[in-house]
Structures are given as structure tokens and as C-alpha cells.
Length: 106
Picture 1 (cartoon, rainbow, N blue to C red):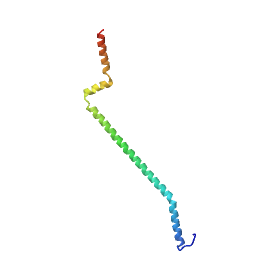
Picture 2: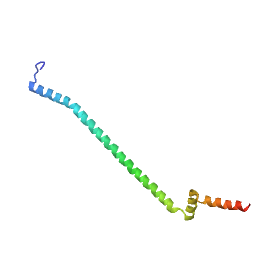
Picture 3: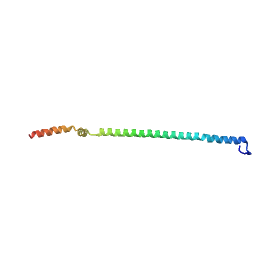
Picture 4: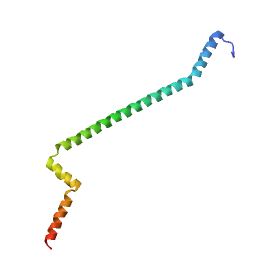
């Protein structure tokens, strides 16, 4: 002790040691708190990723459902005409008939 006091030396030593203990444990508690915060943030990150995947799956199912509904709602003649336009299967028939007409004028 630096100077004599009216308090017992054992009491002073106990208080001093508890203060040293608190100061010595402070970095460990700070690191523990930081690790807990990091773990919590990572958990929230994964929760958000799972929620986004679920929403994407829902949107994909809805888009597939809309496509199937459009396919089933087409009229058969309209579908045949559209597929002929897309595949351009009627072009060769048109060219053949045009060639026949041109040969008729010779």
C-alpha cells in the first residue's frame, strides 16, 4: 500500500484484485460479444437467402403455370397457323405454286 488507511489491508487487496479481474476479462467479453453479433448476422444472412430462394421458386412455378394455361387455351386452328408461321412450312408450298404459275405463262 502506498499510504496507511483506516480500512483493513485485506479489504483493500480484495477490491483491487476484483478490479484487476474485471479489467483483465474485458477483452475476452468484448470478443465474445463480437462473435455473437457476427454469428447472429450470418444467421440472418442465411435466412434472407432461403427466403429469396423460396420466392424465386414461387415465381418460377407461377410462370410455368401461366405458360401451360396459355398452351391449353389456344385454339387448334390458330395453333396450326401460328406453328406454320413460326416453322415457315408453308413457304415451300407457296414457292412451288408460284413456280407452277410462272411456268404456265411460257
